[in-house]
Length: 107
Image (spheres, rainbow, N blue to C red):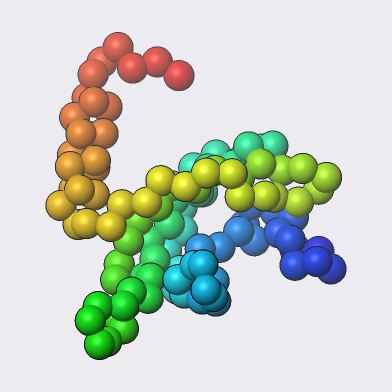
């Protein structure tokens, strides 16, 4: 649910999609994975971002991990870690898979 000011009230309402403006590029969310819920939420996104290259605009795929904090009933953006290169994303994924093989992993 989104409140009257357009602020998301649930983790499911969070999105990477946004209209572009002078500061931020336009984005189209492609996929979303909720990693954690609660007063601090972590969401992983696959999205396309509009990027200007020379005389043209192109949509570039990116990944991001975003942290949100719930305050006064709505979620607020806190931090983002974005990955814009496919090979960088592959290194992160491969490393996590390798580290998860460690039998001493605890909750």
